[in-house]
Amino acid sequence: SNTPEIKIEFHTSPVSDADRIKALETPGFGKVFTDHMVLAKWTSDKGWHDAKVTPRRPLELDPASAVLHYAQEIFEGMKAYKADDGRILLFRPEQNASRFNQSAERMAMPPVPEELFLKAVEELVRIDRNWIPSGDGSLYLRPFMFANEAFLGVRPAQEYIFCVIASPVGAYFKGGAKAVSLWVETEYTRAAAGGTGAAKCGGNYAASLVAQAQAAKKECDQVVFLDAAEHRWVEELGGMNVFFVMNDGTVVTPPLGGTILPGITRASVIVLAQEKGLKVEQRPYSFAEWQADAASGKLVEAFACGTAAVLAGIGLVRHAGGEFKVGSGETGKLTTELRNELVGLQKGVTNDQRGWTRRI
Ligand code: PLP
Ligand code: COI
Image 1 (cartoon, helix red, strand yellow):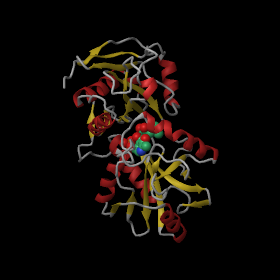
Image 2 (tube, protein in one colour):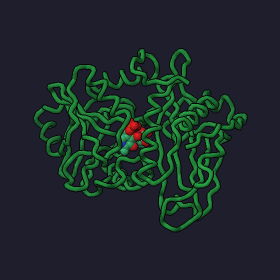
Image 3 (cartoon, helix red, strand yellow):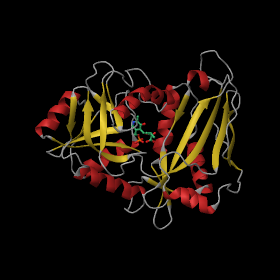
């Protein structure tokens, strides 16, 4: 398909330098936004057109816009990091571009040419580069696409908008490096075979909110979803993949089978662990096995991973029948090592020998 040029419409920031610098000190997650955004349109007759970097502003939608009714929407999550020497780095952005198009295919949406996706992200980071926090923070990038045809019939829309916004962020979890707690959900499930579990579509997150709210009520940071068929196998968390570390050094993570998101952090952690000489098993792991392994001491660490969370140790697991600790209840040694290795690469501290980082 066609890849349009991206027009640049720069505007001077409405935010003062002092206010921006202050906002970058404690950005939290997803609350602060930069000055610009990317917009592109797709119509069935013209394909992709009108691509531009433009001042960030509200979108005007027809009340019959298809996304508002049938949720034909997908998104990505990625980060730009500022290295200590000033370089700006993206981490495996072509993986996000590729997953975006896999999501698009599942949701009957047009693909966004990889070149347009990457260029859009890069141009936005470039124009809003003074919004990238230094130190532990990063610029979270949110490319997304939605159906924008004013039509109430149920079929794939004939008009779409691709948009990228950016948000300076700190740690996803308020506790910082402290191990997180999980609520094991046995009533609601996230995705069933043949469903949209492997797609990064808004609907998956809408469906997870009641379970995440339940987790919050149980004073847990995240919800763990079990499989929809048997309510037996661990799948993933509301917004992260999950790993288990055994006392013989084996690392276990649920397999990609169409019901969980194929995390780019997950894929990277598998490579990092294997390169350390660890055995990584992508296999079904049941909640019963998890409980038994935690009780026997076979399970020494568990961690959640994703773009927003990076790697977060799992300390406590609550469920309908009680609760248990993983290892000491603190973030484990391997979790910390893998996290440091990953962040080292992402921030350009460690030499990237795998071609994972892309300089802007
Ligand atoms: N699983 C879910 C449901 C997610 O929302 C995310 C976050 O993007 C992940 C896993 C981790 O994916 P990634 O490592 O590509 O960010
Ligand atoms: C991400 O990690 O990018 C996500 O989309 C997950 C969400 C919890 C913010």
